[in-house]
Image (tube, rainbow, N blue to C red; front, side, top):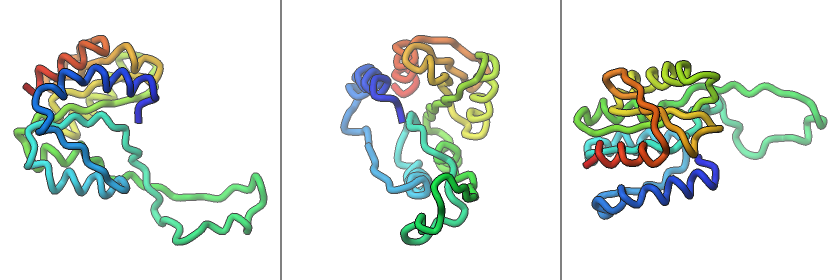
Length: 171
């Protein structure tokens, strides 16, 4: 998710988007990453636009432990292994189910340079077939975004400019 201050800034700047047609905006509660993916798989055809701003953890335990973990069997500081696997990404199924939808995603990554961040965002853009991926680092999330466009171009923008781009994309 977004840190508290960033969330407040994002929510405040989304007023323009919410004012478009609030009755057509859906907020959906899900229990886990699989439920999240399933909702998009089943409902992508029902919407014209998706703004995938949530940072959903895409790792899931390969074999979740049933019941309460027996921590009494371990000493403080003792290590144990947990295998993880990559969970399906909801952003990747939207255009498969609804190729005409406007799809806007985000890529938060602590890349050492804008060029590397753009390259990482292009992978998400290509995998998801998104219209725009807004890339940023944790340190600059409140002030700077890089809009990676479907034509491969990258545009550096302020937080407010990125919100304006979203509004233009979904109007």
